[in-house]
Structure formats: structure tokens, C-alpha cells
Image (cartoon, rainbow, N blue to C red):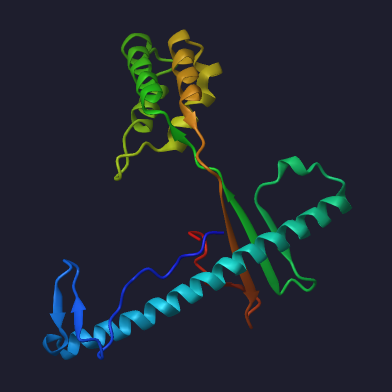
Length: 213
């Protein structure tokens, strides 16, 4: 796992000059009290943040390895096919500790292929809407409405493929085929969460933001 290195440059009061972001050397007697405080405090916070980051990276390796070990042991006992591994939750003996392993396999669409699919759906809507499949029109329109970030709702678009056998139209089938060909799966990310039971018997999450490490 890649470690974040300390690359920032900080200054001390004993330095005769401080260099700003433009590379200009400023005499230390021109540095204000507030600027000296910010320099000292930011350096301290960065150092501590990097230390915490390194410890979280080590912890993430540990939770991944132990979860894999638990998963393998459980599957050995149950003689279950391991190739279907996905989300996995496990507990200590009295279930006061819960560990969640969540596998996120996002779907994205190739822009050219999904645009072609939209065009094919538009042709279908213009020429083939009948009383038996009028329900599809609103579904198609809603599925291809972009969200706030300008992205398609993947779930809504994929939901259209379920209706191919019901619609039974060549244009609709061609559009579905284009959706399937447009699917791209970026790198899978795995998230880990640790829970403990509180005095009320409810699981309380131990807040650890390690998903980005």
C-alpha cells in the first residue's frame, strides 16, 4: 500500500528568510504573528495526519487479511463455492462485535454505445408505441434523464433490459443489446466497517474513514 510522504516545506522562526508560493524570499522580521502561528500549527497537523494515515493504512491491511482468513475458514466448514464472494458480515462469538466487508462493483457506460442505445430507444418510441407497451415510454424517458452531476441513473437504465421479453420488439431488443455492450466495470472497491454493541444492544459504528486509503 502506497504511503503518503511528507513533501510540504515549512519554516522556523530561527530561519532568516521564508519563501512564499511564488518563490520569493521574505525576511523573517516581516512575518506576522498570525502567519507564524499558522506555519507552526499546520506543520504539526500535517505531521499528525500523515501518522494517522499510515496507521489507518496498516489497519486496513489487517482488517482485509483477517476478514479473508475468517471467510476462508467459514467456507471450508460449509464446503461452499468460494468464487461467489461478495459482501460478507462476520461476528465475534457473542456477537457484540460485527465486521462488515462490502464490495462495490460500480457500473459505468461507454458514452458512444449508450448514446446509440438512446437513439435506438427514441426510434422505438416514435414508431412502435401501442396500448400494450405504452408503459415503456415513461420508463425510457426517465431512465435517460441525467442526474444533478450529469450522469445517468445506472439502475434505471439497466432496469429497461428486464422488459425485453415483454415488449417483444426488434428495435427495443437492439437498444437493450447496446446497453449491455455499453457496460463498463471500473476497479472494484472494498469497504470495511467495524461495529460494537452499545448498552442498549444496538450496533454502533466505529467511525473509520479508510475507504480512500
